[in-house]
Amino acid sequence: MYQIKAKILFNEKIISGHYKMCLYAPGIAREAKPGQFVHIRIKDGYDPLLRRPFSIHRCEGEKIEILYKVVGRGTEFLSRKKTGNEIDTLGPLGQGFKISPDLKKIVLVAGGMGIAPLYFLAEKLNRENILILLGAESKGKILYLENLKNLNVKVQIATEDGSQGYKGLLSEFFFHLLKENSQIDLVCACGPIPMLKKIAQLSLKYKIPCQVSLEQRMGCGIGVCLGCTIKGKSSYLRVCSDGPVFQANQIRWKEER
Amino acid sequence: MNINLKSKLGRISLNNPVLVAAGTFGFGEEYTALINLNKLGGIITKTVTLEPRKGNPPPRLTETPAGLLNAIGLENPGIDVFLKEKLPFLSQFEAALIVNIAGEKEEDYLTLAERLNEKERIDALEINISCPNVKEKGLIFGTDPGRTFLLVKKLREVTNIPLIIKLTPNVTDISEIAQAAQEAGAEALSLINTVLGMSIDVETRRPKLGNITGGLSGPAIRPIAVRMVRDTFQKVSLPIIGMGGITCSEDALEFILTGASAVAVGTANFIDPSTALRIVEGIKEYMQRKGIENFEDLIGWLENSV
Image 1 (cartoon, chains in turn cyan, brown):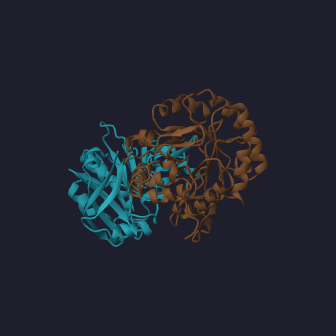
Image 2 (tube, helix red, strand yellow; image 1 turned 90 degrees about the horizontal axis):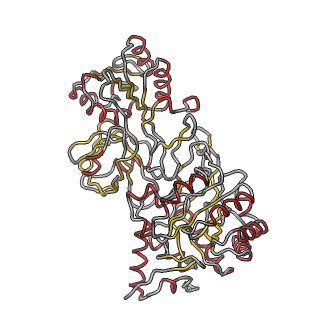
Image 3 (cartoon, one colour; image 1 turned 120 degrees about the horizontal axis):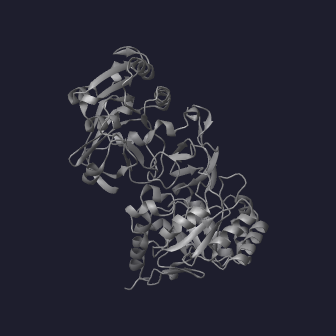
């Protein structure tokens, strides 16, 4: 774990409201595993007060990248950072995906920004073994399709308005896939909670191991403050340090909205 | 110039006056990767209760302007796990070790104190009679001078470990409770705990916290805390650990100049784990600049007019 002043190498808009930031962070880049995150202090001073957590989206050499969507004041400030600015970065944090090397078919399910950690995972896996399902509201909001094509992995798309690929929710598309394929070894999913809930419940029903990457407002990011808990099967779980990647059967999904 | 940062809270000796506040540092384990715990003046543990506590339903945190509203609900592993796993780890550091305890009823506090009594490494107990986030717990003691007096007196009878009483700001006159603690034999006072608050999501028309209300901390409450340290310092002679929104040495010095013998860093640990150590350096630098050799000379050195 490192706390460093990371230099911003670029901070660019990819589509409306969505940005990619690249940081010079050698220690973090060396140690990061897919599914882990960095906790970033958006600006000096104390308003906004807390750091903000971001999945590590890519590591390359001594650089890391994050993908983010502007959703509030914190990310708004972040989007205005310039190349060359330094930003207080803590990481890599949390538990990543746990993938055993003998798995032959892994389905990565990414709803919207959920592609952020799953792209990193896809880069690390044997490309022949994975299928990526990408979901978005419409064609224009599909993130990262070009880069995925360059990765040379199989990608299937669902859009809510049907402007590209399957018309409907990603979870429905996933359901069709499950009915047609019995040979899935593992599902890894990231996206909004309602989507994750459906993906997790379907995977559990079809007895396919499933790992989900969850998001929650965080305090410290390192397991101290107990602020980012969610309901697990027997006790509360800390998203920052017990997760953010959990086995789907650890979570009490009925109580997630 | 030879700067002496040592401070005393009654019988408790501190290498320097900067501690970390209960509930913001866990039991220290997580922070060892980021800072040198030996350089802290003291570590105040997360609240320990008799039985393990699961804590409150999420969401447990929400950010407010320069503040953090929390309702964790004293989640902790209980005294047995504390003694077996946490205390041996914490015992290795040079920093003063202060164990924060809370109970649902008087007997709980007394049992906890008895169980911690023989642990020589523990420098003090901090008695949490001020958590706003648990229904039946300590706050009923901390808002009533009579009950504070009785609890502290009985604790005094079962243990010889120095007792630091942590006070709530959610009262009409904090100095009354402070006086009660003093008369009952407390060693020192910690103030303030969090300020009771609430925040609402107007889109969903729901409270932002699972517990509905929570305790506010962070820079937003600092002026409240400074004022309460002053009120208490003027009326009681017990040493005070000042806390509430401290982020830098200037903040810490506000508390010290108005009467605190030590300070504790809380919420700022989450934002920058090196805050407490930066404050130690900042105070040293201030003393050098002002030509003050002994930290204790700074305590309460407030000019009484602008």
